[in-house]
Structure formats: structure tokens, C-alpha cells
Amino acid sequence: MELFSNFSYQKFAKFALEEARLRTALTPHPSQERFKKLEPNDGKTLIHALSFRAPKTRLLRSLTIEGTPTMQVLDFAALPEPNFDLPIFCANFFTTPRLSIVVLDLNPLYDVSIQKDYKEKYYRKLMPLGNKYSKFKIKIMQLLPWGDKITSESLRFFSPIVIWTKFSLSQYKHDILYSAFKEYFKAWLQLMDQAVEETDASRILQNREAQHKYLTWRAEKDPGHPILKRVIGEDLARDVVRDFLFEGVDTLGDESFLDYFPEYRCEDGTINKKRSMMGKSYEVRPWDANGEFIGNEP
Ligand code: BLA
Image 1 (spheres, rainbow, N blue to C red):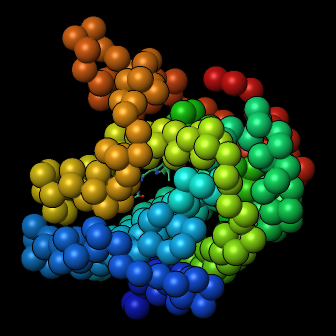
Image 2: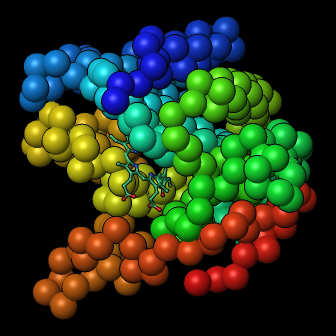
Image 3: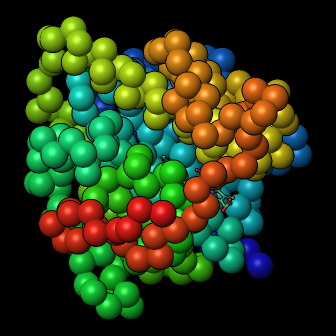
């Protein structure tokens, strides 16, 4: 089975980069030169990798993989400079003819269930946007309904407006996803526009550590890695993950994955290869329309 013709996440990335250019000055990131020509193992898959920086943005990068006609992938993220406590823009879409797996969010730098001031600062105003896609109690009425159980560890990196959804091939769903992507990215750009620089050195350090922890999690446990390995080979996939997608994982902090996530330590001191120690949970959306956490801890 093929995806519908002309389907590509390229237009998502193109929109976001154009929109970003209207708001800020993008300059090529040092990683761009190295990764702009990624050769697929099969000689057919199309891979596009672009990375930039901007005054308040440490890294804005986009990766699309087009295994036409059967697989389309978007991994798009914007990571702030540590002197801003801005959320991280995160769009991860994986599509085959059978299934699309979608995460779209402004990932919080701090756990919003604990840091109420952070939640108040960024998410109170964003709730109407999130609710637009998931507000109805009845799942069938939600535009992009909660995608069922999820790796429990992932939840602490998600915000109350996260769109976590899965759907089978549908032009209608993809049109909704495109509008959600545009709205979420514009919302992020607006936050970026308004962000005021932090001058307190200890706060800047906290922001840097929070981003480093996030990068460390994703560089180790992102569910996209096996596919990346298949498409470009193990060595190059490792470089793409550490020096492109999650660039900063080796420079923003000294802590290791096991320092942040000691529960993954094996007896021999290596990292447990399991994707999740806690397993999957949260069968239904664990936030209410006000962004209050209503899930039970696993
Ligand atoms: C599955 N991707 C998933 C899942 C999540 C994410 C939550 C469902 C499985 C799970 O619960 O872990 C995404 N998880 C995230 C994100 C964060 C997180 C964004 O913790 C951020 C903190 N996905 C990609 C790319 C590919 C991809 C680039 O982003 C492929 C190159 C593939 N994602 C992919 C595949 C699955 C998946 C194949 C299903 C595999 C599985 O369920 O283990």
C-alpha cells in the first residue's frame, strides 16, 4: 500500500523555516555543512537535514526522511539558548500507510506538575490552543485524540498541551495535523519573540542543565533510532543523533545518561537497552482542560 500521492512532511519544514525567517535571523548552524548530504543505504530514500541558529535559539533543526512511497518522517525541533527558559518546540511524526505516530508539543524545560510558576508563565495562555485539538470528553469528537498508552518516562518531558496521537492513513487527519503544526510553531515563535533574557547565572545554569537532561534522554532512548540506523547505518546514525538532532548532548553538561536516569544502570555498569523501565501507561489524556495533571503515577 502506498501513501497518498504528493504526501510529504517537507512542506511542514518549509513552512516552519519560512515563518521563523519572518521573525528572527537564521544563520546556518555549524552542523549543517556536515549533515546536509546524508546518503541513504538503499540509494533511494530521500533525506533532508537542515540546522540553524538564531539570537535566542541555540539550535533549530529539521530532518525529513522520505522512503517513498511507504514511509514519511519529520523530526523538527527548536532548542533555546540557555539564557532563555523557553520551552522546546518538538514535532515528531512517523507515517506509514498503516499508521501515523505523532508527538507535537512545546516541551517544558521544567516539570510543570512541580514547577507551577513555569506552567503559569507559559502554558496558561496556551491551554486554549491545546484544547482545540483535544477538548471534547468523547474521543471520537476530538480532532487529534490521545494515542493510547505511552512510555511513562516520556510524560515528564511533555506539556499539558501535548498532542500525542496515532491514526491510520487519512488526508483529513493529515490536514488537521498540518494546521496544528502551524499553530504550535507560531505559538512557539511568539514565545520566543517575547522572551526576556535571564541574567541570573544560577538560573541560566538550571536552564542549561534542564536542556542537557532532555537531550540526554532523547539521544539515548528516542524511538526513531532503529529506523535511522536502518536508513543510514549504525555509525552515521550515531553521529546524526549526537551531533545533529540532539547536538549539545556532549557539550552542554558533564552529567551522563546514568547520572540523570540511574534506574537504567545494569549490574555491569552499562545502560539498560530497554526503552522504558516503568513500562507504558496513561491510557487516557492525563491533563484536564485547565492543564491540571489528573493521571495516576505508574
Ligand atoms: C514511537 N515516538 C514513538 C512513541 C513516542 C514517540 C512517545 C510511542 C512509543 C513510546 O511510548 O515510546 C516520540 N517520545 C517521543 C518524543 C519524545 C519521547 C518526541 O519521549 C520526547 C521527549 N519517530 C521519530 C523519528 C522516527 C520515529 C525521527 O521521531 C523514525 C526515524 C519512529 N516512533 C517511531 C517509531 C515508533 C515511534 C517507528 C514506534 C516504535 C515503538 O513504539 O517503539
